[in-house]
Each structure stands twice: as structure tokens, then as C-alpha cells.
Image (cartoon, rainbow, N blue to C red; front, side, top):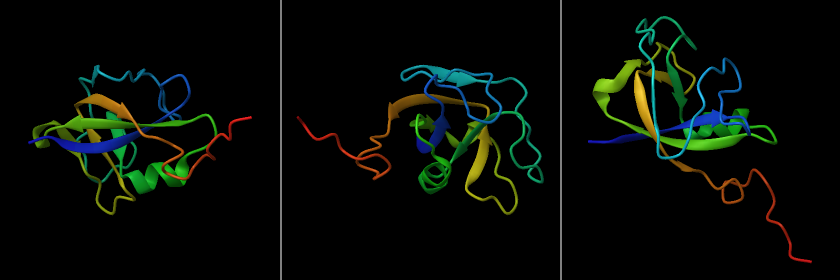
Length: 110
């Protein structure tokens, strides 16, 4: 079945560290060269993470996307992972509500 994880992106929808792919809700992101070496952290591929990891590294202007994939699409879960892993492909299915996560304050109507 489907598995969900999270992708931290900038306001423009690209990863804040390596960029290269623009993630769009409803679209599939895919790479041909995902690194499958479990001894390497943050290598080539689509790097996803736990929600906790995304909240920890979130900065103003960033968004947190929900990614869906199946087990066969996992490229590597690094040994001693800090909450990140790589997949060959995933579908972006939603954007997390940053107010509900407590990352940004709710706007108060004037």
C-alpha cells in the first residue's frame, strides 16, 4: 500500500539544500539516479523525511509537502538516519498546514 512522508521545500517548491526538482501538488517527482547506498546520507534522489525532521529544519518561507510512494520506490534508508531517506519517485499529495503544526501563528482578523 501507499506510504506517506514529508518533503521540506522553499516557497518556490524546491528542496532547500540541493534544489533541482520543483515539487507540485498532484504531480509525480521522479529521478533516474537515486543513490541506493545506505551508508550515505543526503545523496542523489528524492530526499524525504519524517514530519518531526521537517518541523525541526523548517524556516520562515518554507513549506512542508506530503509525499506518497510505495515500498518498491525506496532507494535507501541510511544507517543511523536522522529521519531522512531517499526514494526513486513519489507523488506530492498535499501541503501541511503550518498553523496547525504550530510553526506560524494564525492571522487575527482586523
